Image (cartoon, rainbow, N blue to C red; front, top):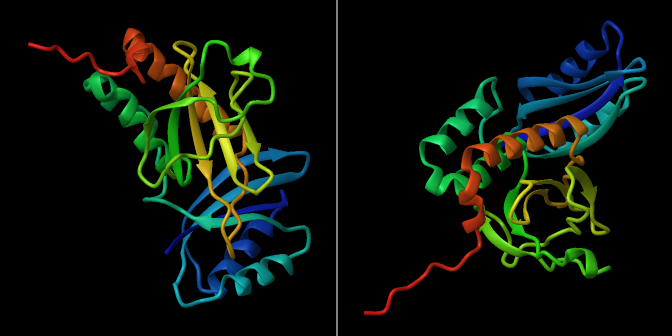
Length: 234
């Protein structure tokens, strides 16, 4: 199976090699490394690895924990192939080529781009500000494959791009389209024995950029999301 492993490590020569060797010895085949952050002598890296299904993840975690200064932030199943440069542009090109299904195209693709489990477009009511403490009042405009029915929605307001974690351990990233009360919600489910990492700020920024670009491309079509179709009676 394909796993995503997020590691915080000292940003000094040799440490990345130690992590890579430990992953290899434990049975993981590294297919991609993405640097999410380098700040204050520390780095946050995402490793996408092919993991033998019969092997125990605990062996890998123990090996990584034995490296001085290394912390494992999360290990979770990755959906689809590792991300490559140009995928965001390709997705937006698909949205522009078929704007009628543009929102559905965006929602269905985002989980694969962000190593998430599912995504939905939530339609937040115009009077959300007066519904203090009332979570999950949004309707669903479109849901991706694997989204629970009904989907578990976090408190998506205030309407700004951000990451959050629910009390039961599920991770979310949300980004507003800026019109029609639409918000794209992406989720990583909490599951045992694996525990996903929360959404990093670079992932939230990436989601926000996709949503802003999608909003520019789709324009007035966003006003139709979540609106029941008009049936003509003859």
